[in-house]
Length: 120
Image 1: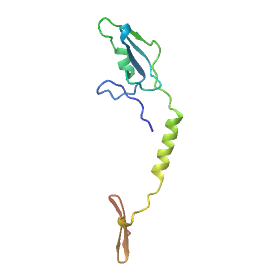
Image 2 (image 1 turned 120 degrees about the vertical axis):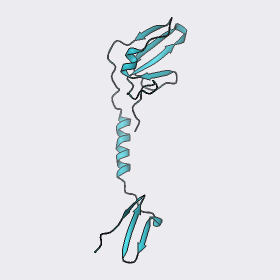
Image 3 (image 1 turned 180 degrees about the vertical axis):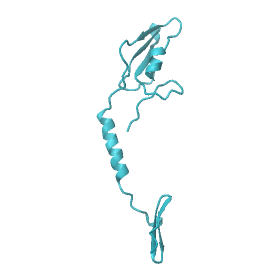
């Protein structure tokens, strides 16, 4: 599953809700709703950073006036989640070298855990 896009600001763990684009030819910074796809020359921002951003000296700042809202989950996200759940639920058959045999007892080994049968 794709994880939600995060704010581009260093150390900010919040989810991105806006996209910052610089229009160098017009000396303009534009902060608008989150773009559908992450682009190489844009920056994703959380609401706090989108609202507090200032433009470089001599530049104009154009900011979206409406609310910034996180994008709704896409069907790709839901399909990926369903696939991940199915994969996690799939049983893993033991490999021949993961099973140890002792006379009268059988201990199974899966990863770092051992299943030891109860004593009689």
